[in-house]
Length: 163
Image 1 (cartoon, rainbow, N blue to C red):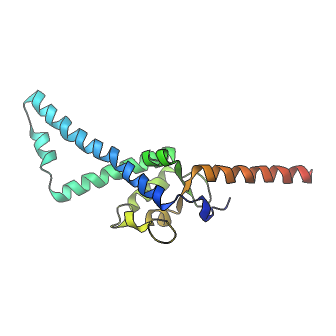
Image 2: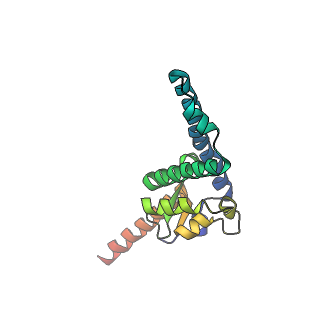
Image 3: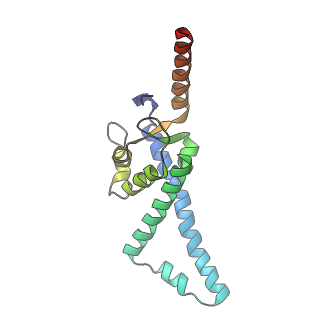
């Protein structure tokens, strides 16, 4: 099945995906921060809390990017979707319209670490660098499934006529 421009998720949906996907990332960061603090309260040892909350800027970036890498790789690798994509009814597929693999999701996630990648999808084709490099698309599920079903039906009609 050929992926045509009309199947791609809109820039607006992609932006909403990004905003929604920030929620679980920040929830984990704040959850760890409070968890380490309360662990310190319970044990009387605040070393872990002090370390976590006193991270250098570089360590903060490393931790945040590691969290981002894990979140996107696992979510997209196993479900083809993230929390944002569930809300907007979009998903990630390979350029040949097949489901992505865990490896594809990992490559997409690594590419998100490229500076300004989050702005790259605002270009004319609506594809981010993490899409282009990993050879994937983010598609609107309803449009994608409709086209897929149409192609299946046309193939069935063709097979019936041949018989």
